[in-house]
Image (tube, rainbow, N blue to C red):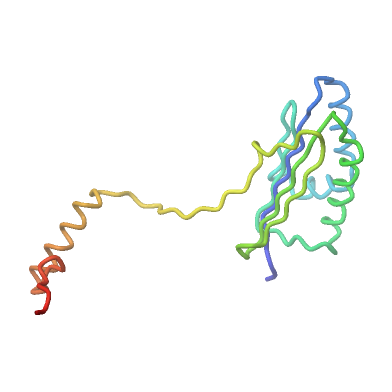
Length: 156
């Protein structure tokens, strides 16, 4: 089974020099890591005019794995070439609440476009308002012979 993570990466163009950016993006696609992306049939990979994004869910992200080594080599390659042309951000969250890894490079990392959000939520429809549901629950408990918690008298 193993420990699973979610991984997301965003590389964005900072430069108005479109030719330089496109050239760097094209070189990026030649890096060994992109053979991993192709093997995954491009799932999670998105290419925009001024950005490249990819994400993996439920992946084993172990440093000794060949695909993770290839990613780290690509990340170093990008970091060396970033200057004012591109910036990037990497986020990995593991199964444990405090297992979060962040990396960035470049003059203007895309903190606003790639971010971590953990939240709790309910996914059901609320047919009655919470006060109506509470009133209904109280009336049912009273009709079953239980006293209303608001009706309890303090002991003397």
